[in-house]
Amino acid sequence: MKAALILLFLSVFPAMLLSAISKDSFSQTYASSIVPCVRDNAVAGEIRLDDGATLGCQSIRNPKQKGIVVLLGGHSESYVKYAELFYDLRDLGITFYALDLRGQGFSTRMLPDREKDFIPAHDRYLVDLKAFMKSVVRPRPDEKVLPFLGAYHEVLLESDSIRDPALAAIRNFVQRNF
Image (cartoon, rainbow, N blue to C red; front, side, top):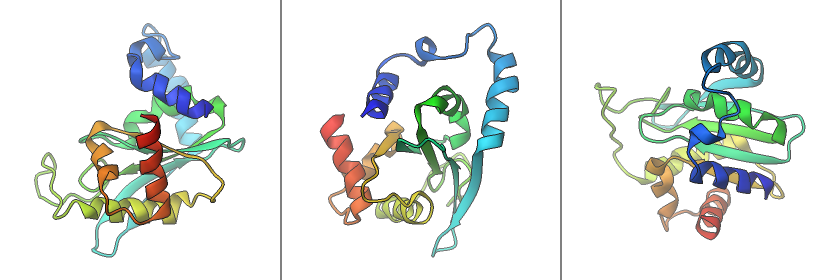
């Protein structure tokens, strides 16, 4: 619940007020603290899907894990953008899993123009998210999974066709709490 409150707080207030790093020393702190923290703790990977596409993903496991945050960035974002967030919240016992959905970040593009998004069917995003949850996140039934979604991906969880329990749990959490 503590993680849910923190993430709600992060979504309500401007990021500049929440930054644990001062604006004056941001560049220096980013290079000397954030980059080494992510480099030493993050594991980047990819998921190969049945249709030949690959999805970029990253995990930052916390040895004192109290909860899981699944991060899906917004339009044209990659998990790389969230390095400062991972750093700022590192002492809260949160294990982060981040996914670049199809057409975003390090994932396969469907069109030659990397600036354009396209997916043949909306449900393909659900198939991709399910593959990520099952092959990378693998939550235990008793674990709390908190989604952190860019506005672009919130529509993923609006589908009534979600049958997978992990995806349904994320959708239900978002509907109940946000």
